[in-house]
Length: 98
Image (tube, rainbow, N blue to C red; front, side):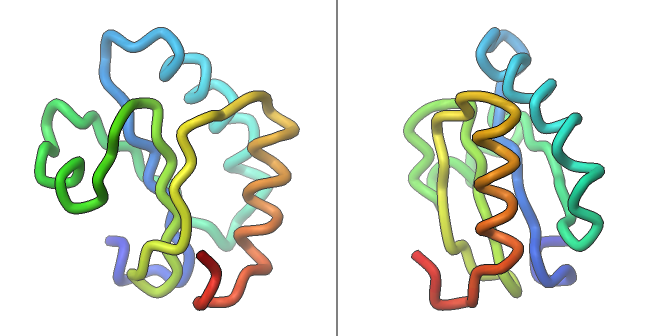
């Protein structure tokens, strides 16, 4: 799915993580505002290879991909406005963004 869509966001979480649940609420508010971004959710308990491949150190973690290449990784999801601003920068970023 990541390689099939121009811009993809992967929200990495665990079921028992309270901060993850809050971040997921923020994500559900922001996601509909960005129709050109595909958002997928991955419980790291079921995708341990994802943690290794992207060196995920904690959850929640938001991975940003352009054309299948990871361009950013975010651990702190402070607020709806912070996530909105991050999505805004992501949707205008070029592939060489790091």
